[in-house]
Length: 400
Image 1 (cartoon, rainbow, N blue to C red):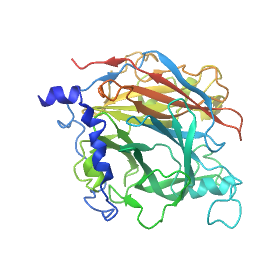
Image 2 (image 1 turned 45 degrees about the horizontal axis):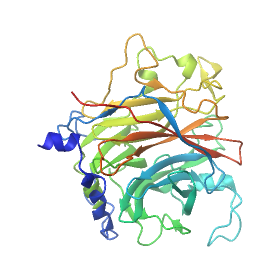
Image 3 (image 1 turned 30 degrees about the vertical axis):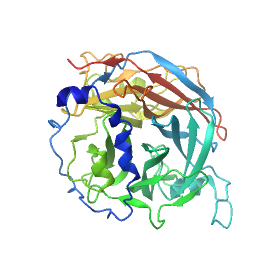
Image 4 (image 1 turned 90 degrees about the vertical axis):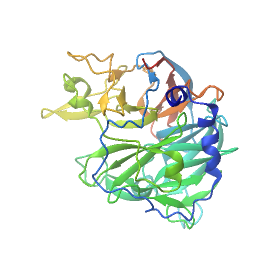
């Protein structure tokens, strides 16, 4: 019975999971149930039973194209409110704006290094319904959306810390921000929310860890988090959403080290380089990662400046990881084939600039939460006039 219920989740797992979202948790300590640093359960957790897996080679359909966000900067991530039919998107706040409480307009450099973010609320066609600003939160690489009745709570990084910009590793003057904790708060259109605001619920799931982000599994009612552990390793964990909301982090359902694409045997390094992780999502026992760089991006490979994302081709890959083993599933073949796992995607290939940005889990029919699709975000357009596009994959492989 448990096996069948989890393979075919009920409508409750999409909607009623979030009913508890209305509970007030502002009084919960960020340290409640904090896990020990650098100690994780083995990936082979029996707590995650078989679930459907996205067919990485299923068709990529254009869901939304060339839509503006509140600000003109690059899309960083997005997530779906499947219960209410909304999309929430994160980006670094553009320069030149003067927000409430600011004595003057703030430059784009300062917005980036301080970790100021803009959240845009779309309808399912990409029309803007609202926005809010987050000051001092981080970079917005991934966000989680938790419906609660007719509104939504967002899970984001918070307590932003200035760090070197990985896009410009050789330029010490280029900096950005990454969050040292997680935060959960309701989306309130027009609000300017500061990371240090009184009443903002913040969490430190693993003692000493940094660079937090989050993503909600809307099908199974879970929260996936990613962080840099005290040993420098990037780790993904999956937690029960109800427990995470209460600040209980000592009972992860799964914990795996982040796989490296260049470590895959036969990876064509001189063609695709080391693509940046641009987003992730979890559904059931599978973690999905989106990697890639904008067209024309260059990395130094074997001492030579090499274009790793050729225009019209790109180096965008989607990867599936089995959280019960920590291994890529399906296993990459030998010799390497870019159509298996990681799977190269040409979705949105005709865009200019084309930088992959974010994964989101779409449940088209709330009455059938076990039928889901994965949306892939892409940024395009000129600097100062960026727009967002979303393509999606719907093919599912059922567990045997």
